[in-house]
Image (tube, rainbow, N blue to C red):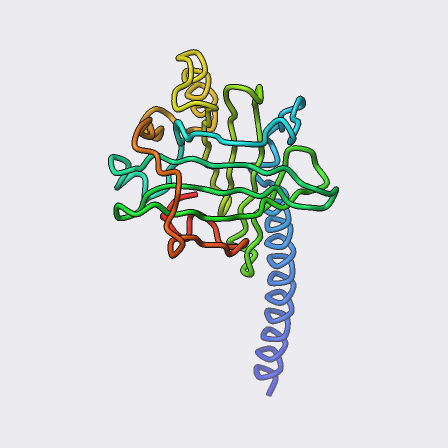
Length: 223
């Protein structure tokens, strides 16, 4: 009987220690999770201080994309010329309207999206019903008249895009984009040049996608 009580006491003691250990581990995991949630990569990106959305309005040509997106890594040589058109917000809480024109299977498609404005200037959100698929956007640099560098974050991974008011930008701007991308661990192996010819301007009416919360990623495989 004495041995039985010693055994039971040992079990209770070990059980208590295990419970305490589990509680401590849970607290540690919770703390780590909170730190992970706070360490949002795109929060470290500084938005353009000179940004004027009214001056950003109009047509922009996609020049380059810096990304580790699997689709681009496998199909970067197949990318198609792309144009976006921006319409600035009409009210304080209104979104930026974005129209993307590009080809898919030899057809010209238009994808209409809404970049939701946030409390922070130069930061936007493409919201999805599944919050894990939200896309955070930062306009990092622009002179409004010749180029713009945008950052996109999906699933905690950052991609970058260089846009120009014309289909070509000066070498100095292209070099700047590559240097900035390298600081995001997106070296030349991850920079993809887009064609500066064969742009599609007018989509067929059956090739217009107007779901505000549907991202270009869902259609073409990359942001």
